[in-house]
Every structure is written in C-alpha cells, then in structure tokens.
Length: 268
Length: 161
Image (cartoon, rainbow over all chains, first blue to last red; front, top):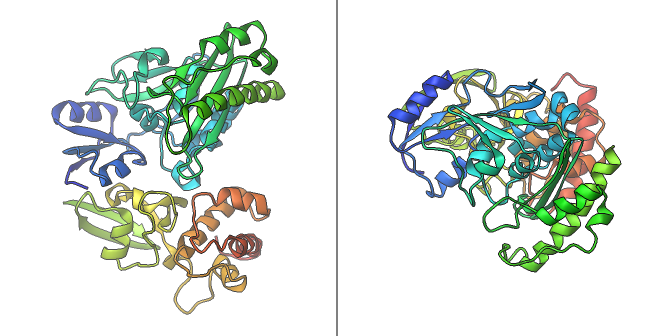
C-alpha cells in the first residue's frame, strides 16, 4: 500500500470540503473494497477521507413513504434492521448474502454503490426497485446512476449520502455464488412495484448491472414463473471466464429469475 | 503519522502509526499480540478475525487508524494467563477442534461472535453457514463445528461473553 494522508471529517460538509480541496482523494467507510484494492496497489489515493465518524450517515428509516438507508449503513445493519425487514424483506435478505459475517460488519451500502463492481449485489436492488441515489449534490435515479463496470454518474467531488427505495408489492433476490469469492456469479432481483415490474441482473453483464426487458414484459402480464418459461437470454456480451461460460451465465439468469418470482409469490 | 488511542483487551493503548498500517499488523508488530494471524491477506480466510466493539471483523482489511477510539478484543483477551480458558477455547481443546492450529484464533473469535448473534443453541447447519468466512486448510471442520456447538452451550452456563 502506498502512503496517503488520512482525514477524519465529523460532518458531511467537512467531508465535501476535504474532497474538493484535496486532489487525488478517495472516500473510505468500511474499507472492504478500497483497502484490498489499495493493498494490491490498484488504487493509490494521496488522501483518504474517512466517512465512518459522520454521525447519522448510517441511519435507516422510513422517509416520505420510502425506505431510506444511509450510505455508511453496513451490510449487517441492513440485514438485521427490523425496518428493512418489514419494508423490503428481499433487501434484508440480499444484504445477508453479501460476503461473510465479518465482512458484513464493515462493508457499507454506499461503498458498494460507489464502486459498482460488476458482480456486486446491491446494484440489482437499486435498479429493480427503481431506487434513488441521494448525494451531497443531487438525486440520481438508478437507471442513470450505474454507467458500466466500476463506473457511475458520481462526480469527483460528490458523496453518496443515502439510498431511497420505493416499497415493492413483491420482491426477491436470488444469487448463485462464486464458491470462492462469494460474489455473484449471477444474481437476479425481481421486483413488482405498484405500477411496474423490474428485473435486474448482476454478475453476468460485461458492463455490470442490467435490466431484462423481455422478462419484465412477460411478468407484467402475469407475475408467475410460468410466464418466464420459454424465454431465454442471449449469451452475447455476457461474461465468460474460468468460473462459467457466457452460455452458463445466460442459463443461470433464467433459472434464478424463475426462482425469484416463485420466492416472491411464496412470501405473499 | 497518525496518533491513535484505542482499548485493546481492556487496556487503553496509544500509538503513533503510519496511516497505512493494517490493524492486524498493528496488533502483531506494535503490540506483539501474535495470536491474531495473517492467513490469506485478502479477507477470505478469517485467520485475522478480532472483535471491534464486540463484532467480528477481518483485521487484515481494517486500517488501524480507523480503529481509533474503538475497543478491540483479540484471542489473548479471552482469558488471563494461567486462568481458566474461555469456554469456547476449552471446547476447542476438549473436542480437538484444531489440527495445525493456524486458523484457530480466528475460528474462536468468529465462534464467540456467532454466539452473540445467534444464541447459545447452535445446530450444525447454522454453525457451518455462519462459519463461511473462516477457512481451515487442514479441512478439519467436523471437530471445529462440534467444538463451536459445545462452546456455545458452555457459554450459556458461564460468566464469559
């Protein structure tokens, strides 16, 4: 790991100022993506701004009829929150599937979304639930926020403060794990919103999270796994590596989408 | 350099460290608490697990500077030298929950955190699922799982947490 200067703001405004004042600065909260990347010298910020001491940035609450999760809420916070469990149980289940118990005590939702790893879990929940990413500057719809592998609409001086999730009528996240890394080989989040059905996929796309329009249309007509039978996903452009071929991932998307619809219906 | 103050195994500790120091290196090299191990160094194996404010974390993926103001407990903090072992340590001894022993400190710290989260009555499935962040390269899981279930039961009847 290369040298850096460490900063510990106590308010969001201090953090915003530090980010604007210091060139080559990065934000850290749980550090469970950034520290490994820094250890490998794939990232070498000159300044590290620690968000973990900003009070209230990890709050979880219902606001304006939406579930608002603060950026520094850990995966364990989300998984164990009775507010999340009641509002969007599929989201609590997703958080409980990230990494392992010790990782979940440190990793944060804001960190996951800022990094936008193409195999991360949270991007599917944001896209399928049509969540809004709130930053120190503005509000971004998920469809506009995620911009390809490790790429987001975030500007250099912008900090995620919270994520606002509309409450679905039904939802489920199904994940097929890479047995070694625990990341999603493929993960599918299906959500039936009051006036929409959205299906988001992670782990399979070369550009990160994406939606499946054909599946969404079929589920809008009938929210049953039967309505997905016969639908296949083209393997063109899907990831292919030693963990699984593009064809295998395409197959898994269909399997997991059907399982997600069944799980959502079983819950209801 | 950055000045940090934290509590390690009940003892207030102050140090001046390079901000890039990992918590596991701070514990092992600055404080000579070498019970916490560096295994994979990539947050997968769990040999480096310690408790930060009572919760299991991987100290190879935590900056020591971020532990400033917090409380750390390591394997050395479970029982005083010469005093009776913590019930979870005793269960690992009794049930031969180790082969080479390298993963053991992390296994025990993880097991105690598991009891905190899941209670004293742990079935085999729960233990195996909750242990996914700890690897034993000797593949000695059978006795580790038995040790954790027995240790959890023993903790219910003891004053140890």
